[in-house]
Image (cartoon, rainbow, N blue to C red; front, side):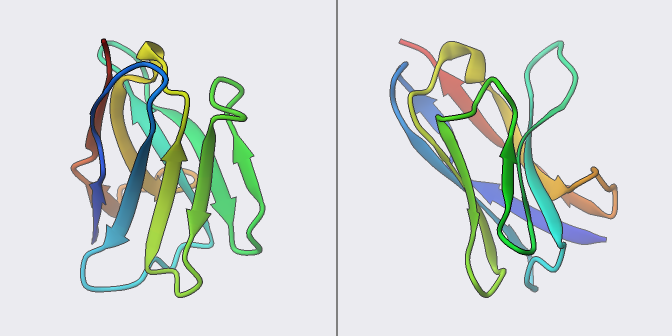
Length: 115
């Protein structure tokens, strides 16, 4: 198994911004198709942003225009820039392969949007 380390979450007011980071412990992120997922209490996990090896990205309708996924050229870190945050963005955010794979595991990072 590969351990993933997500970071950058926190408490932010509506309209604020956060930047999440994801790194593989002790190695680079070698997945060709990677994404950020989130899971809110009582809800199923959902894919909110994805990126493939050629740099193409895709977003869930609910975050399009507000979130930006990116990856450094060395594939060491995956990022999610989140702007104009809304209370409904509150969730634990995870990075993983697309589709989700239990070969990769991380604790996630909590994002709470509240005034």
